[in-house]
Image (tube, rainbow, N blue to C red; front, side, top):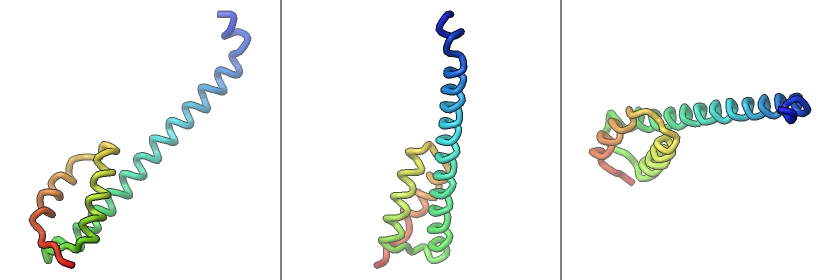
Length: 91
């Protein structure tokens, strides 16, 4: 109890810094998920009509998808994944 009385200013400062850091990290994770989701949807929109995908688009899609899942993104990408597997791969 004596420690809290003597160090309360520093403890409050440390707690506020940690809270700010945690909220910033959460915001950055959400921003990254949004960017990855936009990249995935852009590739989907380009390829869905012709049902053809280039190797570079497929590689970009797979990289974005894997990172999106690591960040615990929602499941709509699983549905796109099944559909993109059916696309013809062109060079």
